[in-house]
Amino acid sequence: MRPLNVLGVGSSMRAGSYGTKTLKVVLDTAQKNEAKTRLIDLSIIRMPMFNPDLSMQPDKEIQKVTDDVNWADAFILVSPDYHGSMSGSLKNFLDYYWEEFAGKTFGYICTSHEKGLPVLDQMRTAFRHCYGWSLPYSVSVNGEEDFNEAGEIISSLLNKRLRMLARDLVVYGKLIRGQFLQDMSSETSDTFAARYRP
Ligand SMILES: Cc1cc2nc3c(=O)[nH]c(=O)nc-3n(C[C@H](O)[C@H](O)[C@H](O)COP(=O)(O)O)c2cc1C
Image (cartoon, rainbow, N blue to C red):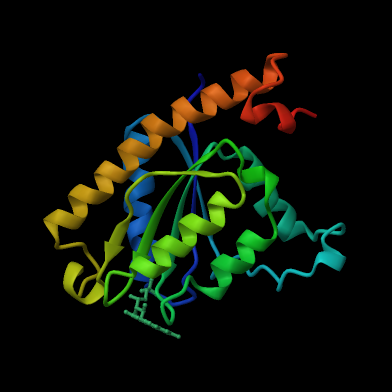
């Protein structure tokens, strides 16, 4: 298979977001594992609140996001912990898509003072409803403890988990995407991918 296309989505609106910094580390490591990468920073690309009535007339900026989502074979999604939930901006991003996520692999990161486990579970549940495959673990980031004042990661454990996440996403993402595309192009009807044929 060609190199895996990995799309990172950062969903904090905060300048200097720990989550978005972490995402860049994962994407750099994915590149070292021979993936191609792109980044959507939802604090820069402001997606309007999803409205199903308007979804047939996407504007230029939304079309660019849609092109990136279609380009991606695998995703790294990052959310801050907001009241034990994923950020509104990530949920809004998700609401624009559904079938685009099928047969693709997802890795999750949450920035939180308390690990953000409910947030990570919600992300996994939401993307599973869109038939995305999730890595069986996620990464929690505690900004105040894991970063120094210059905005650099000082936790060797976090660094190790981010490298593992990037490597596993590329390896497992390739297997899942490769099989999904093969099933899409075969004529066998009793596969998960069969219903996604044009
Ligand atoms: C509206 C709001 C709600 C928050 N709720 C929680 C929470 O329930 N639990 C928690 O640990 N942190 C909570 N936080 C703190 C953020 O999750 C934390 O600062 C995180 O590191 C922000 O990530 P970022 O640096 O990527 O923006 C909240 C922050 C905001 C602004």
